[in-house]
Length: 121
Image 1: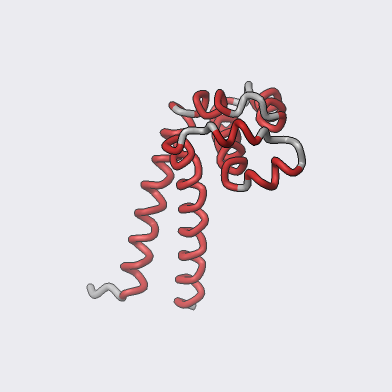
Image 2: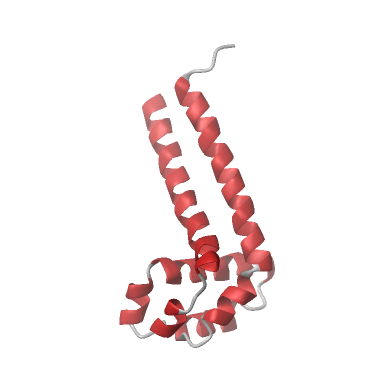
């Protein structure tokens, strides 16, 4: 059975997405409280935590996505007064990468799989 180049690329993108998902799950379960502690003065994070605190597994993933979104689009939230600029400035670079990279990589994987499926049709 011969595999075409598109199938190989699709499998590679899917493997990257699976590894990326594992990294996101690790960060949302073991590093989320530490990330939120660096953003404690920000109104957006405090309000989200109050609404999503008791929702369990999916709540942790939603809070992780909110933290990653705040770090990725920090100027958007700072202009609206919901994110403290000092919180973003003092956020550790390693934790920032752990939050932002899975979000960006997942978006790129979805885009790549969409392009591959469009090319296959």
